[in-house]
Picture (cartoon, rainbow, N blue to C red):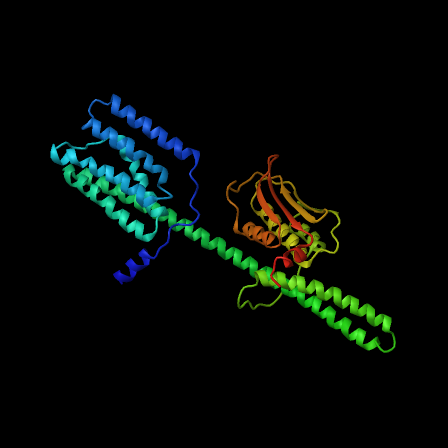
Length: 384
C-alpha cells in the first residue's frame, strides 16, 4: 500500500493552467526587497548582518518563479535558509537572518499547489533540512510547535487549493460533457425528422412518377434539400456525440415556445424582433434553453426584482438574445453557476458565445450570440 501511494504521488503531473506572472508579483518582490534592505539598515540587532542581507536580496527574487518553477524556487529559497544556519552552528547565534525571510513560506505553498508529485517530494526534503535544523537549535518547545504548525499549514494550504482546483475542473468537465450529450440528443431528433421527411417524399415521388413526372421531379428536389441539410447536421452531431450515448429523446423546444417562460413568473416578459424564421433546430433549441436557464436564475437568485425581460433578435447572420433582471444581485459577481456554464458550452459548440454578469445599469444580464447557419459552417470544418 505505501509503495502504491508513493507511485501515485510520483505520477501526479504538474498543475494545469499556470497563471501568468502578473504585475502584483513584481510589486510583491519589490516591496519585500525594500523591506529587507530597510530591516538590514535600521534594525540594530541583526545577527550576521552582511550575510543575512546578501542572502535575502538573492533569495527573495526567486518568488517570481514559484509557480512556473516551484522546485527550483524552493531550492533557492531554502538553500539560502540553509546558508543562514552556518553562523548559528559555528558561532552559536540564535535566529540568524532577517524577519523579512518569513516570505519563504510562500514556497511550500507553491510547491504543493503547482509542482508535480516528484517535484513535491524532492522539494519537501529540501524544505525539511533547514526547517529541522532551525527547530532543533531553537531550544524552545513553543518555537518548535509553532514553527512546525506554520510550515505544515503552508504545505496543507497549497495541497487544499490544488485539490479544490482539480475538483472544480472535473465538475466543469462533467457539465461540458453533459451539455454535449444533450446537444447530441437534440441533433439526433433533428436528423430523424429530416430522414422521415425524405422517406415520405420518396414514397410520394415513387407513387406519382408514372402519371405525373413533374411532381416526381419536385419530390426529388425536396429530397435533395432535406438530404443536404441532414448531412450538415449529422456532421455537426459527430463533433459532439459521446461514445455509447443511449437515451430517450424528449420533444425539442424552440423560439416559438419562449412564451411558456412567462408562466414561470408574472415578472417575465418576452420580446421577439427581426428575422427568426428558418433557423437550424439546434440553434432554436439553444436559444430556448439559454433563456430558460437565465429566467430560472433571475427568478431564484436576485433580491427585490420587479421585472425579467427576455429579448430575442434575429440579425443578419446571427441570433442575439438578452435576459435581464433589475434585482439586487445576490450572486457573486465573479462566479458563474454550472447551469450557465453549460449554456456557454452549448453556445460554443454551435459557434457562438454566451456570457453572464452584473449589468452596469443594475441587475443581472445574460447575453448570447448564435450563428444562424451553424450546421453549414461547422460542416465545412469536418474532414470529408
